[in-house]
Image (cartoon, rainbow, N blue to C red; front, side, top):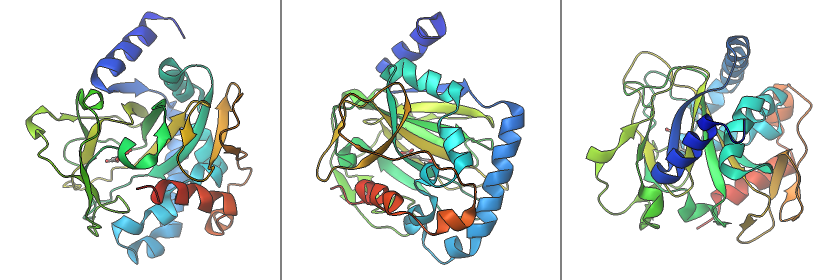
Length: 277
Ligand SMILES: O=C(O)CCC(=O)C(=O)O
């Protein structure tokens, strides 16, 4: 796929705009399987999620690619990695993942923010694949981006700790965002988008009667270094000649009980995302 016209269009448009979509990735059989697995996981976690404000849902919905094999299969799906490779090259690691599901009636939203402000990753050879298991559209609170903002540097960002904000510290851009420029990232089930670590993005509440279910997977190249403590990452394609991250192995289990008892590795991955200033 590497030098095909599709790849060239993808990487050129992504460089210019800071995002690219839609990219069809999951086969319909795999999509149905993953959706079933997600709904089982959601039912299993429902009570605990209901007891937490959205800003704390990350403690259940993050880093499941490192504890549940079916999530790892989504995050390492060949068509997903092909598209990510067209941006980052042949060597890919997963630095983090997070389910962003908004069920009908949820108040969850995500304020305008830039990931680069608080992830502490350098150089910015980082991209997020947002992989949809349900339709994601303007009514059910799809992700929105402001094109080209990855080229404008970091904007000041406040930490509001707003309870319905799905971001753990309610990170919110502290200057006016020109919403008239925003683009809705509408996806069909099984499609994904890619977005740059510096792009201004967010999403609104689900105003529909249908769920919006997707997982954001954060990919880095092995050259990337993280500020502070050495963190963990999973090699999913190619090789790591740098050793900047402690390596975490793909999970074997598909079992909720394993995911509930989070391994030390998963806890450290969560902390490395959450504690950055
Ligand atoms: O799922 C959303 O609406 C936003 C996702 C997001 O903020 C991210 O992937 O960084």
